[in-house]
Structures are given as C-alpha cells and as structure tokens.
Image 1: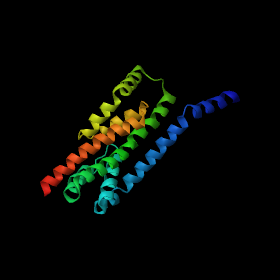
Image 2: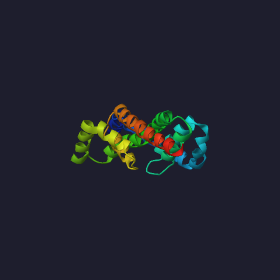
Image 3: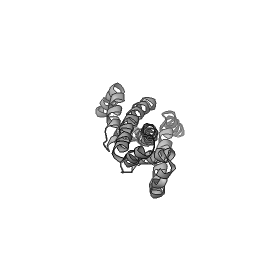
Image 4: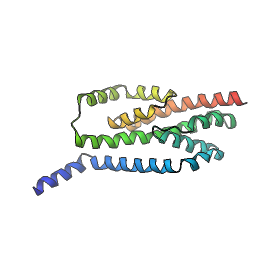
Length: 188
C-alpha cells in the first residue's frame, strides 16, 4: 500500500502535473491581482510608450473581460509615433495573452488526472500542431474578443509556446500599427 502511494506521488511529479498546477495557480493569482487593481492600472497612458505597453498587457491578460487596449493604441497613435505605438502595444498585448496560454497549459494537467483523453482532444491536438501557427496568426490579427480561447486551447494541447508567441506577436504588431496609423490619420 505504501509503495503504491509513493509511486503515485512520483508519477504526479514525473508527469509534470505539479508544474502545471503551479503555473495554473500563479496565473490565476496574477489575474486576480490585475482584476482587483484594474482601475488604478488604466491611468497609465500618461506614461507614454511604457503606459501603452502596460495598458495593452493588462487588457490582454484580463481573460474574457473587455479592457481599453484598442482605444489606447488608437489614441496613442495620434499622440506619439504610430509605428512605435503599434510595436510596443503589440508586444504588451502578446505578453498579456500568454496568461491564457498558461491557463490552458496548467488546466491540461488537471484534466488528465480526472479523465482519459478523448478522440476529440487528440484531433484538436493534431490540428493545432499542424496548423497552429496560421490559426493563431489569423485569430490574433482579427479584432475579435474570442482570441483568449485560442490561447487556452494552444496551451491545453501543448502547442509550443515559442511558435504561439511568434505568431501572436507578429499579428498583433501588424494589427496595432494599423490601429495607431488610423488614429493618427483621424486625429491629426
């Protein structure tokens, strides 16, 4: 009985489930902190590019909740260099979206402990490993609020974080440069 319990705990650590649980817990704690301090954090636009970066980071990390990221890019493009606003906000937004990825990554380990993987999960995993880059790029460049779901799925199916981030950051920089240039054109 004792050896069975010991092998289960070794398996728990060996499978990376402890690491996944830790990532999930840290991500949830950070999201809670951001949510609690959201009003104070929204006043950062007066700090220029750093403010734009932080606003977009926060906006993207508030999973499934709207935040003022797009508006800050649009208005920031009229105040500062629109290309730099697009790059800085794209980087901030992409880094914030990693919360969704890591929530998916952490939750996958929890799901594995409670149920066997279904054929649906395996098909989704196969699709994402084959077409994940282009899927991430297309969803990240479109101005739709459901991108968080793509991040959670990418993490849950163990899609490489480097590929996910590269697709996302390139799409978000392009999209935010367009937003910033539009803001500059309209307000100048």
